[in-house]
Image (cartoon, rainbow, N blue to C red):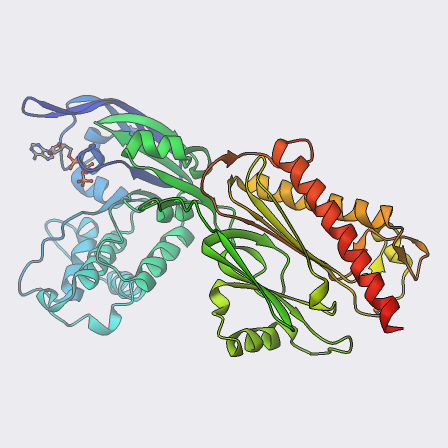
Length: 483
Ligand SMILES: Nc1ncnc2c1ncn2[C@@H]1O[C@H](COP(=O)(O)OP(=O)(O)OP(=O)(O)O)[C@@H](O)[C@H]1O
């Protein structure tokens, strides 16, 4: 649709674009990003013919852009500029009607029903139909932006050139506009400053810096930390969108000073063990409250009776946490029927400072390999809750590996203690409701891996294995006492 080849541009003596080449395909949503002054607007003005070509070639729909007559080109390409000039005395509708000028004959201009329909549709698209008779100078910045976009849509172009299209718009309007553009069949070339919006909506991105192309590719190819740093001189962290397969980036505005002294504090109550950290820890867990990946400062292992039953255990647990004065937004909470006195704590300093807490009820031990043979009903409650706190910086992969390492160590402890699944009569691998928490301070040494053969994995496995065995012994002893 658009083929830019070896385009350079200079304002007077000042060279602002250097040998730019790229292609935009039909129907593509193409984003142009780069720091201030990198030449994005100049490039856009060359595409819209607001500036004349000095060097290089731009071909649109197979034809060199300078060969199009103005009206012909206006039917092909419409522009939403960075700064919208407001002509005083014009209403919104009159501004949008200007978009129909390429369709008017120069000598016998005739306004048709179709023109009316197109203008109404454009106003509806930008949700400004209700303000069509309002004077432009009486609109807010975002509304003016939408009116200018309606004018561009009224041109019925095949290509839309947008210079920061969501400038001045509130969040709802931004998404409404971008969703509309995304669903249209139009080819869109848009300048964005918001990298995440560009990632969500653009098929491909062009990165400019100092008037040169740094890279061109899909958001997944380009949005990595080193690329962002090389284009914007800014340190950003990449992460994944929670719902869509799209990469996102976020600033790390400041780095906290590492805490070297007491990092966690344990309080053992009759009905719960509470571990509080002196700073938020990044957590991966299968906990009832706060499960998944999150940051937390409070970790609660609450005792409930053997006959605890609740339709909405999560909500009931949240109520419990609130009653105890905990903020559930910062809390990871789980339950156990095990006597809280039987919790096992261990800690070590090598290769990194870490701390382990385990409660192990194995009344409902399950052999995962044979679980399919079991009846659905849970015979009796039983849960192994494992907390691991690490004073280190774990990569996301290391979190997952630590979880695997801890799970394998727990399973080996069950094996060596000959814990049996009472329904299948085979050795159990866990219980049906086990919870594991991997929490890391994200300060100090960086661990890319935490598998069983890494220095950190070896120690985690060893201490979790020993603590789990000890917790099973305590559970069995108390069961014996209570008989
Ligand atoms: N009319 C002009 N005359 C002289 N220099 C100009 C003119 N317009 C822009 N420039 C210069 O050209 C360079 C590129 O400007 P341009 O507006 O294309 O950058 P940009 O990437 O769109 O910036 P921003 O993100 O700030 O909008 C800048 O150094 C700017 O000062």
